[in-house]
Length: 237
Image (cartoon, rainbow, N blue to C red; front, side, top):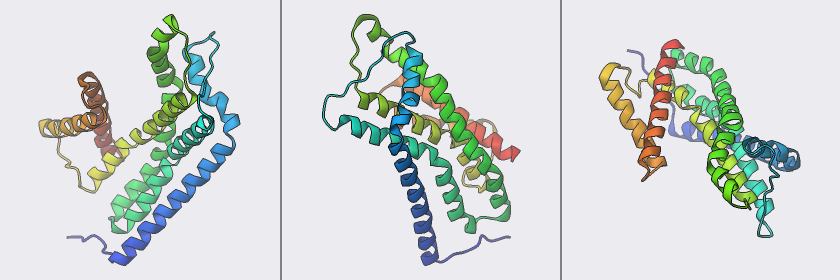
């Protein structure tokens, strides 16, 4: 029986430190670039808001001295983290690759293109479709009856966190496929897998939306579809 390659603890630790530093370096470089170009990003960040309420004069307000700059720092950090997800996945693979079998390395090499594609596609889907619709639902009643003084920090943090969440969630099928390939997740099918994935999906939904049964069911359904997509991907690649 083929044995997995073995590495020493010191080599393991040094490689881990190296991969973490590379990712952090890329993340902070992306953050600095985005923050210095924040004035150019403002129309991009306002676009979902404008699409949700075309024809309205939309303004964002700040109520404390450092709020505007803190909003810029936080939103650009979330955006930088979102676009850095492929780098994080790649560095994780480079860290794990010495302990993988050749067929597992080959799988990840083929899947890495999909990592970037899924990440960008998920960000685009959230930006162009989900956020305008969600903002219309969340703010529609208020605009119908009240005057809005939406804080810049609230809006930008909401947008930045949402795009980051979309980028992270987009990797679930690929992570699931990898875990199936390296036999951490079971590769069986039928009712047994259905029960297994439903329990994991609902556990994730319960963690993200405690106390909201409707939100839990919606999230659990989304997570289940993503997990099943990972199993399908493991068969295709």
